[in-house]
Image (cartoon, rainbow, N blue to C red; front, side):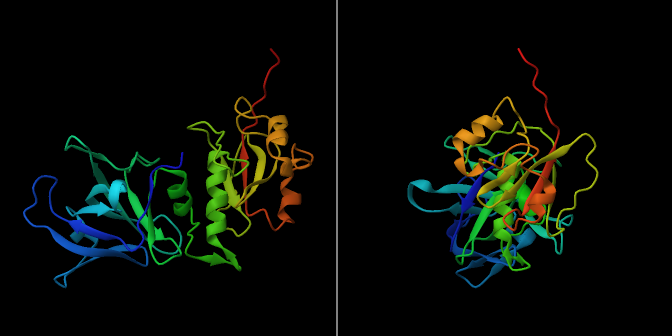
Length: 265
Protein backbone atom coordinates (compact mmCIF):
# COMPACT_ATOMS: atom_id res chain seq x y z
CA UNK A 1 0.00 0.00 0.00
CA UNK A 2 1.12 3.50 -0.64
CA UNK A 3 -0.15 4.94 2.62
CA UNK A 4 -1.26 8.54 3.01
CA UNK A 5 0.67 11.13 1.07
CA UNK A 6 -0.05 14.84 1.13
CA UNK A 7 1.19 17.70 -1.02
CA UNK A 8 1.97 20.80 1.00
CA UNK A 9 3.71 23.23 -1.33
CA UNK A 10 4.29 26.68 0.15
CA UNK A 11 1.89 25.76 2.92
CA UNK A 12 -0.01 28.60 4.59
CA UNK A 13 -1.46 27.46 7.88
CA UNK A 14 -3.26 28.36 11.02
CA UNK A 15 -1.93 26.86 14.24
CA UNK A 16 -3.19 26.39 17.74
CA UNK A 17 -2.45 24.20 20.74
CA UNK A 18 -5.61 22.09 21.05
CA UNK A 19 -8.44 20.52 19.10
CA UNK A 20 -11.01 22.43 21.08
CA UNK A 21 -11.39 26.21 21.09
CA UNK A 22 -7.76 27.37 20.98
CA UNK A 23 -6.25 29.57 23.63
CA UNK A 24 -4.40 31.32 20.85
CA UNK A 25 -4.44 31.09 17.08
CA UNK A 26 -1.55 32.33 15.01
CA UNK A 27 -0.94 32.70 11.30
CA UNK A 28 2.30 31.50 9.85
CA UNK A 29 4.04 29.50 7.18
CA UNK A 30 5.73 26.14 7.38
CA UNK A 31 8.67 25.40 5.14
CA UNK A 32 11.05 22.52 4.70
CA UNK A 33 14.68 23.21 5.58
CA UNK A 34 16.70 20.22 4.45
CA UNK A 35 14.28 17.53 5.73
CA UNK A 36 13.04 19.42 8.79
CA UNK A 37 9.71 21.21 9.11
CA UNK A 38 10.15 24.79 10.30
CA UNK A 39 7.22 27.00 11.31
CA UNK A 40 7.77 30.73 10.93
CA UNK A 41 5.10 32.74 12.72
CA UNK A 42 3.92 36.22 11.87
CA UNK A 43 5.32 37.59 15.15
CA UNK A 44 8.85 36.55 14.15
CA UNK A 45 9.13 33.36 16.18
CA UNK A 46 10.52 30.20 14.60
CA UNK A 47 9.44 26.77 15.83
CA UNK A 48 11.05 23.44 14.97
CA UNK A 49 11.52 19.88 16.19
CA UNK A 50 10.03 19.38 19.71
CA UNK A 51 8.71 22.95 19.69
CA UNK A 52 6.16 21.86 17.08
CA UNK A 53 4.55 19.27 19.37
CA UNK A 54 0.98 20.34 20.09
CA UNK A 55 0.75 22.61 17.07
CA UNK A 56 -2.35 22.13 14.92
CA UNK A 57 -1.95 22.65 11.20
CA UNK A 58 -4.48 23.27 8.44
CA UNK A 59 -3.10 21.52 5.36
CA UNK A 60 -4.25 22.75 1.96
CA UNK A 61 -7.18 24.98 1.11
CA UNK A 62 -10.89 24.80 0.34
CA UNK A 63 -12.70 21.48 0.42
CA UNK A 64 -9.39 19.61 0.51
CA UNK A 65 -8.35 21.02 3.88
CA UNK A 66 -7.09 18.52 6.42
CA UNK A 67 -6.62 19.51 10.05
CA UNK A 68 -3.75 17.69 11.74
CA UNK A 69 -1.92 18.00 15.02
CA UNK A 70 1.75 17.24 15.62
CA UNK A 71 1.80 14.90 18.62
CA UNK A 72 5.45 13.89 18.78
CA UNK A 73 8.90 14.20 17.24
CA UNK A 74 11.81 11.80 16.80
CA UNK A 75 14.69 11.15 14.42
CA UNK A 76 15.25 8.02 12.37
CA UNK A 77 18.99 7.31 12.51
CA UNK A 78 18.88 3.97 10.68
CA UNK A 79 18.95 5.41 7.16
CA UNK A 80 21.96 6.39 5.11
CA UNK A 81 23.94 9.62 5.34
CA UNK A 82 21.90 11.65 7.84
CA UNK A 83 19.02 11.35 10.37
CA UNK A 84 15.49 11.93 9.11
CA UNK A 85 13.03 13.95 11.27
CA UNK A 86 9.80 12.04 11.94
CA UNK A 87 6.51 13.49 13.22
CA UNK A 88 3.69 11.63 14.91
CA UNK A 89 0.46 13.25 13.76
CA UNK A 90 -3.27 12.89 14.30
CA UNK A 91 -6.09 14.03 12.05
CA UNK A 92 -9.26 15.69 13.29
CA UNK A 93 -12.49 13.86 12.49
CA UNK A 94 -15.89 15.42 11.66
CA UNK A 95 -17.20 14.46 15.12
CA UNK A 96 -14.39 16.43 16.79
CA UNK A 97 -12.34 13.38 17.72
CA UNK A 98 -8.90 12.50 16.39
CA UNK A 99 -7.28 9.47 14.77
CA UNK A 100 -3.66 8.70 13.95
CA UNK A 101 -2.71 10.07 10.58
CA UNK A 102 -0.50 7.07 9.77
CA UNK A 103 -0.79 3.31 10.11
CA UNK A 104 1.95 1.47 12.06
CA UNK A 105 5.09 0.73 10.05
CA UNK A 106 7.08 -2.53 10.46
CA UNK A 107 8.71 -1.19 13.63
CA UNK A 108 5.35 -0.15 15.11
CA UNK A 109 5.82 3.58 14.61
CA UNK A 110 2.99 5.79 13.42
CA UNK A 111 5.09 8.52 11.88
CA UNK A 112 5.18 10.93 8.96
CA UNK A 113 8.02 12.87 7.38
CA UNK A 114 8.43 15.58 4.79
CA UNK A 115 10.63 15.69 1.72
CA UNK A 116 11.14 18.21 -1.12
CA UNK A 117 8.77 17.95 -4.07
CA UNK A 118 11.25 19.53 -6.50
CA UNK A 119 8.96 22.52 -7.04
CA UNK A 120 9.87 24.61 -4.02
CA UNK A 121 7.43 22.89 -1.68
CA UNK A 122 7.29 19.52 0.00
CA UNK A 123 5.33 16.29 0.29
CA UNK A 124 4.26 14.70 3.56
CA UNK A 125 4.12 10.91 3.69
CA UNK A 126 3.89 8.07 6.23
CA UNK A 127 6.64 5.58 7.05
CA UNK A 128 4.08 2.77 6.74
CA UNK A 129 3.39 3.31 3.03
CA UNK A 130 5.45 2.17 0.06
CA UNK A 131 6.66 5.72 -0.61
CA UNK A 132 7.79 6.22 2.98
CA UNK A 133 9.49 2.83 3.16
CA UNK A 134 11.40 3.54 -0.05
CA UNK A 135 12.71 6.89 1.21
CA UNK A 136 13.82 5.18 4.42
CA UNK A 137 15.61 2.56 2.30
CA UNK A 138 17.79 5.43 1.09
CA UNK A 139 16.01 6.47 -2.13
CA UNK A 140 15.82 10.13 -1.21
CA UNK A 141 14.25 11.99 -4.16
CA UNK A 142 16.04 15.25 -3.46
CA UNK A 143 19.39 13.58 -4.24
CA UNK A 144 21.01 11.90 -7.26
CA UNK A 145 23.49 9.08 -7.77
CA UNK A 146 25.93 8.89 -10.68
CA UNK A 147 23.81 11.35 -12.63
CA UNK A 148 20.58 9.41 -12.05
CA UNK A 149 17.84 11.32 -10.17
CA UNK A 150 17.04 9.46 -6.97
CA UNK A 151 13.39 10.22 -7.68
CA UNK A 152 13.60 7.60 -10.45
CA UNK A 153 14.78 5.01 -7.93
CA UNK A 154 12.04 6.07 -5.54
CA UNK A 155 9.38 5.43 -8.19
CA UNK A 156 10.99 2.10 -9.14
CA UNK A 157 11.03 1.08 -5.48
CA UNK A 158 7.35 1.98 -5.00
CA UNK A 159 6.37 -0.09 -8.03
CA UNK A 160 8.50 -2.97 -6.74
CA UNK A 161 7.00 -3.04 -3.25
CA UNK A 162 3.49 -2.99 -4.68
CA UNK A 163 4.27 -5.48 -7.48
CA UNK A 164 2.90 -2.80 -9.81
CA UNK A 165 4.56 -4.31 -12.88
CA UNK A 166 2.98 -1.94 -15.38
CA UNK A 167 3.61 1.18 -13.29
CA UNK A 168 -0.06 2.07 -13.74
CA UNK A 169 -1.20 1.86 -10.11
CA UNK A 170 -2.43 -1.72 -10.36
CA UNK A 171 -0.65 -3.50 -7.49
CA UNK A 172 -0.61 -7.29 -7.37
CA UNK A 173 1.23 -8.07 -4.14
CA UNK A 174 -0.22 -9.33 -0.88
CA UNK A 175 0.26 -7.65 2.49
CA UNK A 176 3.03 -9.30 4.49
CA UNK A 177 4.84 -10.76 1.47
CA UNK A 178 8.63 -10.58 1.99
CA UNK A 179 10.97 -9.53 -0.82
CA UNK A 180 14.71 -8.97 -1.06
CA UNK A 181 15.39 -5.57 -2.64
CA UNK A 182 18.68 -4.17 -3.94
CA UNK A 183 19.95 -1.77 -6.61
CA UNK A 184 22.75 -1.16 -9.07
CA UNK A 185 24.26 1.64 -6.95
CA UNK A 186 24.79 -0.30 -3.72
CA UNK A 187 22.37 1.82 -1.71
CA UNK A 188 20.67 -1.44 -0.79
CA UNK A 189 22.77 -4.61 -1.05
CA UNK A 190 21.34 -8.05 -1.91
CA UNK A 191 22.19 -9.81 1.35
CA UNK A 192 21.15 -13.41 2.03
CA UNK A 193 17.75 -14.45 0.70
CA UNK A 194 17.37 -18.17 1.33
CA UNK A 195 14.63 -19.74 -0.76
CA UNK A 196 14.19 -16.70 -3.00
CA UNK A 197 14.80 -16.34 -6.72
CA UNK A 198 15.21 -13.34 -8.99
CA UNK A 199 11.75 -11.86 -9.62
CA UNK A 200 12.11 -8.67 -11.65
CA UNK A 201 14.09 -5.58 -12.55
CA UNK A 202 12.47 -2.19 -12.08
CA UNK A 203 12.63 1.32 -13.45
CA UNK A 204 10.54 4.46 -12.86
CA UNK A 205 7.84 3.23 -15.28
CA UNK A 206 7.45 -0.16 -13.60
CA UNK A 207 9.04 -3.53 -14.32
CA UNK A 208 11.71 -3.71 -17.03
CA UNK A 209 11.38 -7.48 -17.08
CA UNK A 210 9.66 -10.13 -14.94
CA UNK A 211 11.09 -13.61 -14.31
CA UNK A 212 8.14 -14.75 -12.21
CA UNK A 213 5.09 -13.00 -10.72
CA UNK A 214 5.21 -12.56 -6.95
CA UNK A 215 1.65 -13.74 -6.39
CA UNK A 216 0.62 -15.85 -9.40
CA UNK A 217 -2.91 -16.03 -8.05
CA UNK A 218 -3.14 -12.26 -8.58
CA UNK A 219 -1.36 -11.95 -11.93
CA UNK A 220 0.29 -14.40 -14.34
CA UNK A 221 3.02 -13.96 -16.93
CA UNK A 222 0.42 -14.52 -19.64
CA UNK A 223 -1.80 -11.80 -18.24
CA UNK A 224 1.18 -9.43 -17.95
CA UNK A 225 1.95 -9.99 -21.65
CA UNK A 226 -1.65 -9.17 -22.58
CA UNK A 227 -1.90 -6.14 -20.33
CA UNK A 228 1.54 -4.64 -21.02
CA UNK A 229 2.78 -5.18 -24.60
CA UNK A 230 6.09 -3.51 -23.74
CA UNK A 231 6.93 -6.52 -21.53
CA UNK A 232 6.51 -9.10 -24.30
CA UNK A 233 9.81 -10.88 -24.82
CA UNK A 234 10.88 -9.86 -21.31
CA UNK A 235 8.83 -12.35 -19.32
CA UNK A 236 9.90 -15.64 -17.77
CA UNK A 237 13.14 -16.85 -16.14
CA UNK A 238 14.97 -17.33 -19.45
CA UNK A 239 14.12 -13.90 -20.85
CA UNK A 240 14.53 -12.05 -17.55
CA UNK A 241 17.81 -12.61 -15.71
CA UNK A 242 19.66 -10.38 -13.29
CA UNK A 243 22.83 -10.71 -15.38
CA UNK A 244 21.09 -9.34 -18.47
CA UNK A 245 19.39 -6.58 -16.50
CA UNK A 246 22.67 -5.45 -14.96
CA UNK A 247 23.67 -4.51 -18.51
CA UNK A 248 20.42 -2.60 -19.11
CA UNK A 249 20.63 0.98 -17.83
CA UNK A 250 16.84 1.17 -17.53
CA UNK A 251 16.94 -1.37 -14.71
CA UNK A 252 17.65 0.57 -11.50
CA UNK A 253 16.41 -1.77 -8.77
CA UNK A 254 16.16 -5.55 -8.56
CA UNK A 255 14.38 -7.95 -6.27
CA UNK A 256 14.07 -11.58 -5.30
CA UNK A 257 11.02 -13.34 -3.92
CA UNK A 258 9.82 -16.85 -3.20
CA UNK A 259 8.52 -18.65 -6.27
CA UNK A 260 4.99 -19.86 -5.56
CA UNK A 261 4.29 -23.01 -7.53
CA UNK A 262 0.70 -23.34 -8.58
CA UNK A 263 -0.64 -26.87 -8.65
CA UNK A 264 -3.04 -27.88 -11.43
CA UNK A 265 -6.66 -28.08 -10.32
